[in-house]
Image (tube, rainbow, N blue to C red; front, side, top):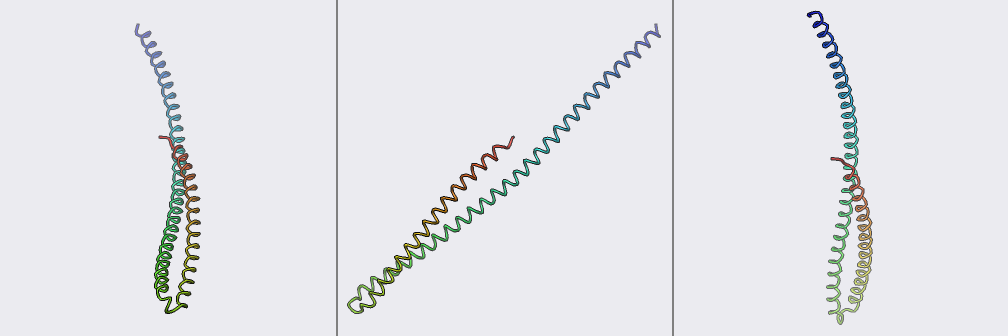
Length: 159
């Protein structure tokens, strides 16, 4: 019967449309959920990028501090080297003065005074070097702590 077949086709068509609408609605919801998830991921990436930039700035600051410390140490070593050379020269002068003691007693006394000053200078430089070593130790401890913090920060990154 053609009339019955037409009604059956109409019902099938309507059922198919309802199914298609449900599928389209479900796909739209899935799309919205995916967009929200992507948006959340992008926000997290942007936040992580900001944190990374901040951490790089901190690392740069630490590197600058290390450079300053190394520069201070180099200056202290250079000063110590100059002082050591001065002491060596003064010791040589004292030796020459001792050889000429018979000729000039005052000259020997002056050389002895110079040696005493040099020894005081060596003592002062030694104290400065000791202070620099303490500062290096403090900076090394700070760097170690910063390294731990950096490891914690790096550990927060998810791949």
